[in-house]
Length: 396
Image 1 (spheres, one colour):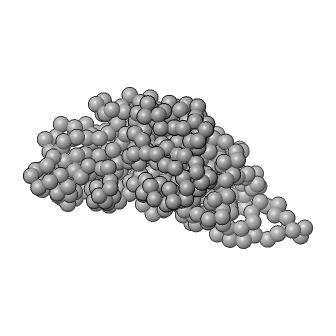
Image 2 (cartoon, rainbow, N blue to C red):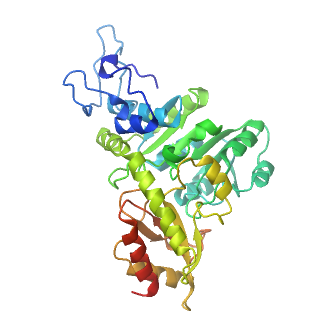
Image 3 (cartoon, rainbow, N blue to C red):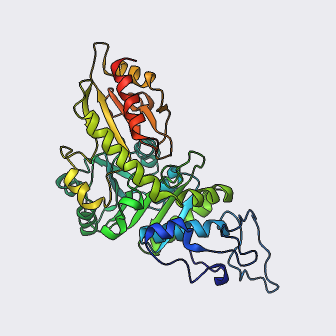
């Protein structure tokens, strides 16, 4: 989308500097009327036409655009080194808009392990709309190469690290495979965030974020985002999907999202450090069968993650709890029941640390082991988080 706003609402043509500075100052925009450091929230749904029936201010109707959206979108595009960005009402609204911009009969390749709600949608409603969907192991580039169909595959969708097993996909290699087949590559980078990985710089065409998670970081906003490497015809189709279906967030939510992104680098860096400490401490714990974290040298995707995740390995890990005789699910759920600092809740990427038994959430068709607990590491004292897990593993 073109920003037709008055340039006077910018200071020195937006803040220059590193991504950390861009995020901390939210591009440094100052309200031209009041000189407020935090720009006003625009809640209008409709806009007056000019006398000659034109809309020279660039705004027509709230379902298509909003001034408050522009700051978040410009900041996201800057952080991801993209040409343009769009915000959505949720991560699912953002992700499904990409697939809805395709045509019936198009072939797409997606991961076997991925965000469960999108996996369900792709296996059900998307197939009903005529998309041909193949699920493959995205950590295996040979498997991906075998799955794409030159001339027929239109989209390869990657999630890395992939929720909740935290498998790693080589984005640059996947981009080469997709492009050689005439397809686009889209990357769900929710867990990596632009702090750790910028997929567009590695060859991806589109990046998706569930902005509910790390971008907002405070468990009080539901939103999604897409960032594109090019403002091309396909991107315009995605924008049309958003406008026509109405998958937009409210301006109040987007203002809170921008607020959250100001501390993105601080939060993600703290979570990464703590997650690595926890993974290393639990790796040899007698009550843990396996720790799944790409920051551990024994992780199958560690070498790729070390190459494409620039300053850490993420704040997410999973642990598989040893069966104590009552079954894997029972053992894992019992551990989660005994935590006192961690919070038993769905979601991830916020300031508070969360633990969840994923298999019971996802249901019988889930590929997730029933002994697995997913841990979202927040910004608390890591010693407190480790002590709490150790007492829970010890039986209280």
